[in-house]
Amino acid sequence: MAGVDNGTAGAVRLRITEIFASVQGESSRVGLPTVFVRLTGCPLRCTWCDTAYAFTGGSLRTLDDILAEVASHGLRHVCVTGGEPLAQKGCLALMSALCDAGHDVSLETSGALDIAEVDPRVSRIVDLKAPGSGEVEKNRYENIPLLRPHDEVKIVLADVADYDWARAQIATHALDRRCSVLLSPVAGALEPAELAEWIVRDRLPVRFQLQLHKILWNDARGR
Image (tube, rainbow, N blue to C red; front, side):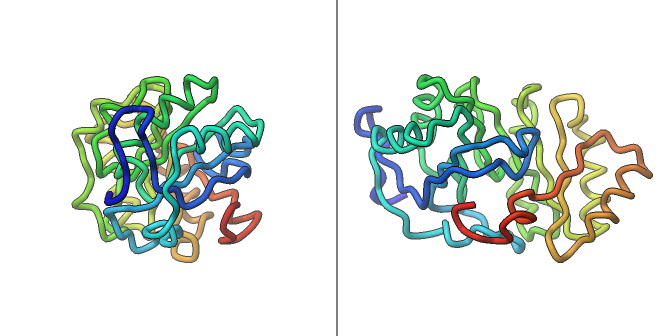
């Protein structure tokens, strides 16, 4: 990304949309008080994206500055998100530095970029884009063999066709044997109860989830 210095660790600067404290709304960490570091920029344009404001703008900040603001919130859990955080190479140094500072770090990534170089201490929440996202062709299936038990795969579903696709992916790649698999309905497109019923009917080895932050605060930024 233009204007981002990804050289030595001391020179790392990243373009940041926002840093804020809230409760984690997704993943197995749902409900935990968490500091969110939202990086700017994303190469994907999912039809249901709710963070398009992070595609552009933001401010260029040093690694030390980011770490200091995260520390000021006094929370152990930190989620690095976007946009697509891995679109900025300096994200790798940021996550390692957060781990070094004693934080429990998770990464929310689209699954379109290589996760191999992410610090092994980080829990990687990796999307698989269903057809309804409009970006199914961007899935980087080379990431799947890299998944570890403390990582998670998230699939957001807009309709029954997406659900059938997700079931096929879970079976084909034995995803549930690698890590936890999370299925979420697109807000306003797929009824949550309907998705829950399908999962139970099919005895699917996944975790159903809703976006807790949307239930609490709708689409408010910084929540």
